[in-house]
Image 1 (spheres, rainbow, N blue to C red):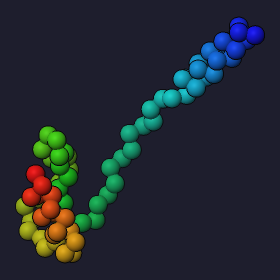
Image 2 (image 1 turned 90 degrees about the vertical axis):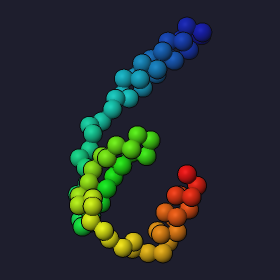
Image 3 (image 1 turned 60 degrees about the vertical axis):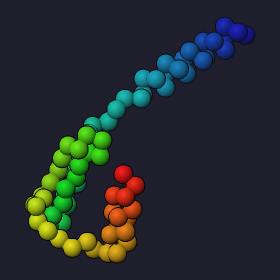
Length: 74
């Protein structure tokens, strides 16, 4: 009985382990904004950008407050 349980357990582990492969990396989404910057927070590296130096007003007070809170928390 122990051998049967061990064999079934091994079979399940082998079958589930083989199906855990990584899928292809998806394409970046298209962004319709006039200006954006995507930056890695840890390294500071710019990952994507479109008109990064263009000055634009924030879209809402909520976003301005979120930026304010994050800035002062750092």
